[in-house]
Each structure stands twice: as C-alpha cells, then as structure tokens.
Length: 326
Image (cartoon, rainbow, N blue to C red; front, top):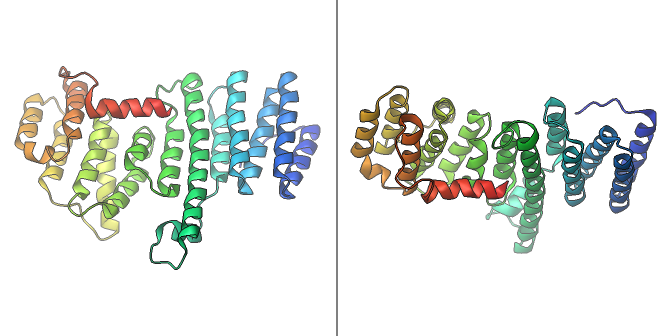
C-alpha cells in the first residue's frame, strides 16, 4: 500500500470521505471526491489532489464499485497530465495500488461464467459474465490511460513495461473469454516472460488438439519480431520449465524444432542458415499465415534484410491494433 504523509486537514477530509464509502453512499462520496479535487486543482495543490483520488479510487474498488472507482482512477491520470507529474516509482506505486484494488473473480463467479457442468441458470451465468466484463473494461481503460501518460512522461516508446504486465495479467485472468492476441501484445512489452510462459501453457491446454505448438511458436516469434532475443529465450526456457513442473513436455513437432534452431541461429551472424531454416521448415511454417510476416520482420531486425511489403500484412495489423488500443 502507498504510504503518504497527509496533512492533518487532508487526513480528516479523507477519513470523512472513506466513511461515506464504507456506509455505502457511493454516489455522494464520488461527487464529494470530485468537488474536493476541483478545489485542490484550483489552488494548484496537485500532490494533495493526487493523494485524494488515489485514496478514493482504492476505497471504491475495494467495495466493488468498479464504475465509480474507475472514474476516480482516470481522473488521477488526468491530474498527472495537468500537473506534468513524471512516471516514476512513486506514481507507479499509486497506479499499482489502484490496480491491486480492482475486484477479482471469486470461485463462484468463475463457475457461473465458465463451468458448464455447474447447476447454475443461464441467467446467473450471463449476469456473472456481464460483471466480469465490467471489471475488465474498467481496469483496461485505466491502465491504457496510464500507458499513454507513461509514454509522454516516462521515456517509454510503447508505455511502461510494468503497466503492460498488469494489463496482460488482468485480461487473461479476469476476462470471461480472454483473447490471446490481445494479451500477448501486452506481455511481450512487459518485463516478465516467466509470467507470460504460464499464460502460454494455459492456452496450450485450452487450444484444439494438435495446435499447442502453434501457440508456443507464435509467442516466440512475436518477441523476435520486436528484436527481443533475450526474452524470447527466457520465454522458451520458462515454457519448458512450466510444462516440466506439470509433468508435461513440449510437443515434439517440426515447427518447434524450427523455433529451437532459430533461437540458436539468431545468436550469431548466420544469414545463410536463417534462410536455409525457412526453406527447410516451409511446410510447418505454412500452417500459420502470420509466420511469414513475423519472419520478414525478424530478418530485417537481425540481418538488415529489406522487407518485401513494409509493415503490411498480419504483423502490421497487430501493430496497428496495439496503437489503436493505446
């Protein structure tokens, strides 16, 4: 939890507002938070305004008021913009505290939304899914706003990696039907390939029979298409370790043999070998049309090969999707 040195006046104000939230007067409390925030901003008390909104967002979210909490959280990011507050360890702590306050699905929620064998009505399952989507949409809008702000003040061209990790993790664990493509675009810009590996293995377990190797290959190629050989290797090793911990193994397929050799090849200046591998494993690579685009990008980043189609194609669509999301 963020520890702030509040003034006595601010502390009393926060205590009054927290009491309103605790009593269930959510709308009244939200309006009071906004009114006090407005006064602080008018008086140029940006630090106090930020502390107020941080406290309010956390209080609301801990009481399950996602909409009210998200509004205050978004207002906090707006306050950072106006005050020209930089992205640093202090502001990251505030963002993380709000992120940690977002509600998580209980075991009952998970059964309602995903366990078809459970004796719950379609109405209950539908309501649980709606609640889950509201949580995810709220957290997503907050973290996307924070990502945009971090690009402007923290020196991150695609947003702070810590925020990408939070968003990828929340979408995967909380969305009723998480999309691997959307989750991947955040994890590959984060700092924790080991966490991404668990998501990859989870997706392998849920995908169609015979397609588990496609999931692994796509994740590795995505890292490599961004020029990130280090984390591609960390993901590869972590996927194998996670499977081993679950008494499983990587599928023994030509596609994953290609990935293994590709990681070794990119460690050195071996353009002829890179081209040979693409030709040798062409039939396996043709299983997914996106692989050719990934490999074009990899060739450009590692061997200065000129791309035939620029940023068009599937990888270009992926990049555009990410830009639109942020």
